Image (cartoon, rainbow, N blue to C red; front, top):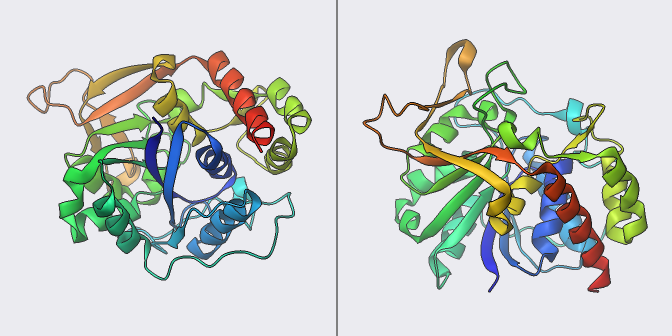
Length: 306
């Protein structure tokens, strides 16, 4: 049986790949896409989500969300994702309209209407999630788990300590991690290991229209090194479908919200500061070869199934 999920996202190129997989994988049942300001402004992230649903002729609804963090000034990632957030490919222009309700309202409605608790997959700043929990706390028992891209126990990518999604809205991250909802943190400790290799990228255009689209986007993606490109957000779905490829540890995660460590996720790795309690399952290692194999197989299957 497929896993019912809601994606809260800020596409963004790696988000585009994650949405592509969520829309098409037979073991995932994407109910709703909500958008947030992050990689680019929320009007652009919403437009990009609509471009992807149109590309795949999907009727999954899209709802636009928070235009800025709760408190901290907004900083985008245009230097990584380009001005539009998804440059390099000419998507259709006859797009659907987003839902009339806000992301927070849509999240409440879809979560409460679900027959079984649903899984949230945030791959951008957690602003919508924090607003949802503060405005409609009754939804929390109806969430099976949150599998969130973000954070790092080691080196950050915005500062030496902070990863981008948490850095963008650390106050929202603090609210999410203190909510009591089961959380899996899929952070830089694994996403910077599971790079999509150059060899894998070179194979994409041979895999059909979807591979061609992703290859075009990746050519404009600046989160890369000599080994490959970072597919941060896709790792959340890989975890949901193949948790056996990950090494995890349970620990308490605190989020720093001020000073030079703003946005840092601090893991109580010794269990010394919270009486042994934990609030997250933290991914600490990953089978990078298995990720690359799964990525290519998933892309190939999308066009084969149509």
